[in-house]
Length: 293
Image (cartoon, rainbow, N blue to C red):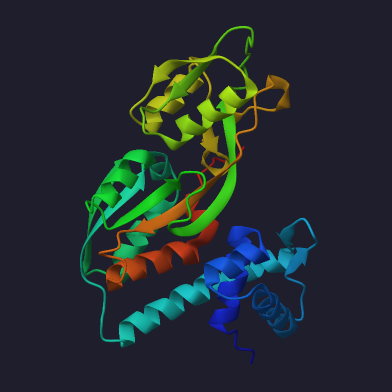
């Protein structure tokens, strides 16, 4: 019977999450050749090609996608078994901050599953904008923050990096001779900053047509045609549509979805268990549920 080494599975999962052997090596704290060796050993064990890579990109094969699902389950079970038999079962209260738009993803289900696995851990859950929650984390008012980090920052554990896209509706038409109407969160807001940066770089005028305190308000305003906004690709809800090249809006670049911890809390068993659960769930954690079309 083949036994899959959790170290090799973690390497595969990290490559899939970062989309890069180099970034995976940095995150794992190893050299890039080590990452390549781990993937080669896993492919030899399975007898299948798991990753296609060239000088420009890394992508999973269908067998690689299947192994990712198995890897998450194996790693989660491994973490739970280690915690159970270590004699230091996580307990206490975690102060968790969750980015407002992530409340519409699978994260609530993951937190519910975590609570079932670790019944001695209770939550204080704060849902707000990423910028505000980052400030609360720095002020030691949170133990864990799950959300977006600003461009150029390296803090935290990367769960997913993806494109930031303009969103509207299928009926959205823009008159670029006039200031672009934006639907934004109040400052500090990472998505608002990236929209302003892209438009300023392109020399396009804009105005805040609607300022929303929460993601439900933002979705409602964009769906009503008040203006356009920006969301991470996997967070675009069913009611909205990514805007394409025909709308002639500037590229927004990418955004990091991360788990950040307070330095005073990062070594707590409960915090480590939550991070392990998040990482084992992978990019599926940060995905908006979609109805079948």
